[in-house]
Length: 149
Image 1 (cartoon, rainbow, N blue to C red):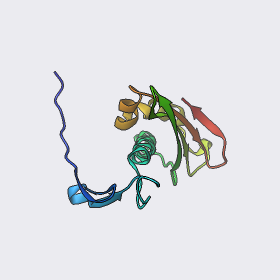
Image 2: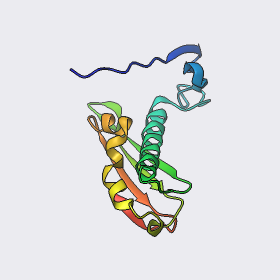
Image 3: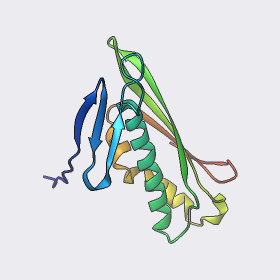
Image 4: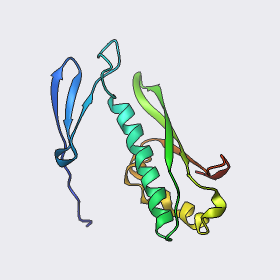
């Protein structure tokens, strides 16, 4: 049996559909549903899920490159989430994540090795993929696609 690593987050309804999410030492975040249900005063859970996947992938890519003592430059990410009706209910259908390296691919000698393993380091994406697709593309600083998966 695998050991589990617990973590805890607490939420408190403030008003309407606006919640305060307490991450403990990491601070708080306000969430809300978009109009007309909420006031759109913060990200909703679907957007938090998309942000979590993109952030985890960007950190995993950075880690995989740094493992070889190489510099990925200023890594950035964009993510597009798609909702679709499934059995009459809205669900996250899939995410498309684009990661951008801050340097040219040629400046990272072990890039191919890092690209072959970084997605497996991402706890969030690998977990979410059990329910729906997360498509990942990586581009270097010149916009050249170096990975699609």
